[in-house]
Every structure is written in C-alpha cells, then in structure tokens.
Amino acid sequence: MSNRANRSPLLSPEAAEARRRYRREWNRRNPEKLRQYNRQFWEKKAEQFRQQKEEENNA
Image 1: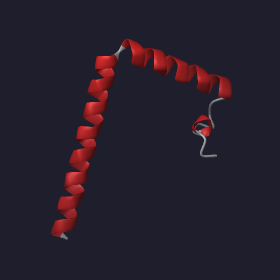
Image 2: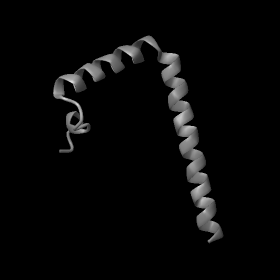
Image 3: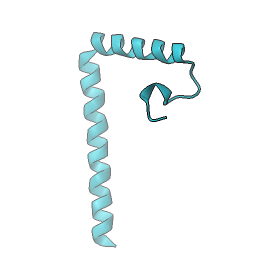
C-alpha cells in the first residue's frame, strides 16, 4: 500500500491519474508560483522546527 497511486483511496485509479496529469500541467505552466509555494512551505516548516527546538531547550 505504499505505492503513491494508492495514497488516496477516495479516488479511482483513473481519477487519480487525471489529477496527476492536471497537476503536472499546472506545474509546467506556473513555475514561479510553484517555487513560491515551495518556498513558503519550507519557511513555515523551518519556523516550526525552530519553535520545537526552542520548546525542547526550555523544557
């Protein structure tokens, strides 16, 4: 069940493939937005990591 195609049991295999196809096309058409979203995601994760480390040091 670790296969990526099985990640969403709510979608049929055809619907999952259609979603992947749409996402690949969107990513190809919007490279700057994709970079921005990835940057925001990792900045948020880094802040969460910093906060977690700070909490561990204060505990």
